[in-house]
Image (cartoon, rainbow, N blue to C red; front, side, top):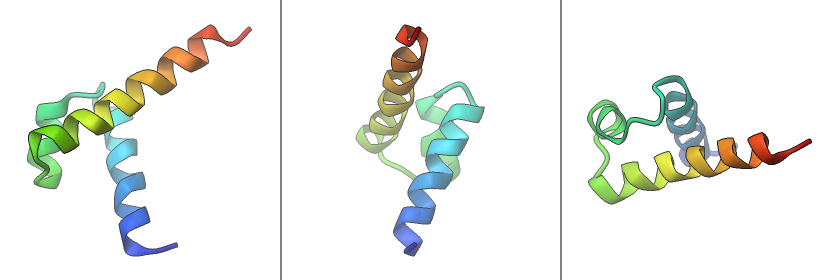
Length: 54
């Protein structure tokens, strides 16, 4: 697993732990607005998919 993949995984873990707060992610990981929103949207979509499972 490459360094980029590890960073992505860490950002996703933090998004889950912080309640998908884009400002928090942007601050902690020095992300731009679009990038932090992309991560929070991914977490929100994943949560919605899990809620719809029987």
